[in-house]
Image (spheres, one colour):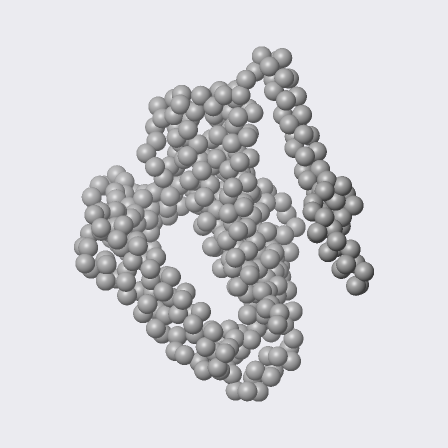
Length: 409
């Protein structure tokens, strides 16, 4: 060891020489990595040049000018203003928003269904456990496209005529006085934005951040000193800022309720959620929920039964045992495959055209591509969108995964 140190000291005194890039172990690894990087860059450059030359020979050129041209087609469901005279770019934005909407709704609902089914599958009640097992096996072993078509057909033929909800007794026909499922879709309350809505939104974000900080403080105090702080301040921190801002800015955010008395032919007010969105949302949720249920079941079973028995022996109630002993350890097993399920649900939403829902694949990768003939540009933009959204989901979930991962001493 002494001779090696003396050799390195002598080389340091002599200064850096180009031969050290190969002979010196301190630089050899970096040299080979740099050479490999250059070869990869040259390979991609050659492929790109070859592609451009082939396109030029075929009389094709890559241009995104078609995005400013009128789209010329209608979209049934849009979260922003859109007409057939809007540009292809706006049509693509509508598709992006529609995709993000169904992906967010699907991830939330699939998580609720999956956690519930995963826990119930471990129930000591034989009937409930077998029913959950049948649900999981049925949805996991049938392609998602089949379930989208089946649920889409069921949703399409469901619902009553809107006139059934009209009249003096209409209020009794509305579910919770706010929802009406008809053969046109689901009539639901619509959010109305007014002056001061941004402040209310900021207050809500501040409340969520404060609640997360309080939860972290409670957990840190419990694990460091064994003192259990009350949990109710978290809800006070969460709800107080947005409620205070809401009352200070009256009318900033309101609800437009479905009105069954204003018109004797149709329901007025609120918003109409189309059946394609409902069908796709339900299909993706129950399908992905079956996979999440297995992840949850595996995570819970990974926790030794001896730990739950020890926690019960200390006098902890079952809810405390689940929250403080089982779930913190089970999440280390549940979260990594859960990330993959969220990614799969988002990518499976590209099958939305099967039920007539206009997502990004149906707009940019479907109608726009066929009308303009710009297949390369549309496919590149489509790939870029799914790549960005997948990396974003992975990044957020990996941050959460790092918080629940086992911390080594």
